[in-house]
Amino acid sequence: MRPAPALFGLGLATLLAAPALAGDSQHLLERGRYLVAISGCNDCHTVGYPQSAGKVPESEWLTGNPVGFSGPWGTSYPANLRLLAQSLTESEWMKRARSEMLPPMPWFALRDMNDADVRALYRYIRSLGAKGQPAPAHVPPGQKVVTPYIEFVPKNLPQKAAAR
Image 1 (spheres, rainbow, N blue to C red):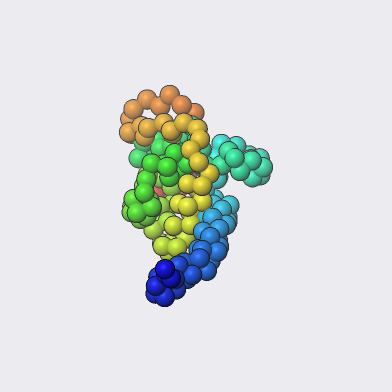
Image 2: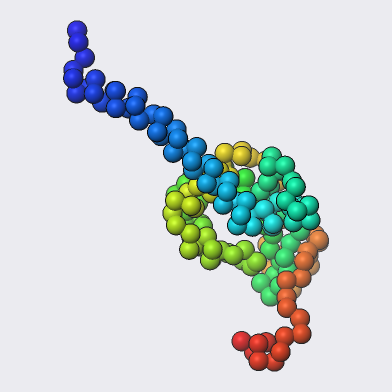
């Protein structure tokens, strides 16, 4: 019995499209890696990245940082993005990327990225696999911080700037 021409055509189209889909997937991973590398994600989310001028193996990228950033919002910690990406669907990641986050996370940069780039970040980070421990929880203002932290508060501002 011969396959129906429509089914044969659909099967052939699927086979021919497979390399293109694989190429699209590879392109998204490469784009995601590029965005992570140039946008400063590693500066906070990878231990030792800025101090080593970026000489941290990719296998250690984006595993979070136990050093907090302290300011009027309390003390926040760079998330372990590799664990986070494993715990969220792509749709949940997209929604979270468009949500306000605690300083010093430049959440507005993610908010303003196009969907393709936010998707590429997710796919790349997820491709790295789960590794490391979750970041410490946010410490509200006025509570004791028991981890190392960086004070993220400007000093000696002119009166006019401080009033804003």
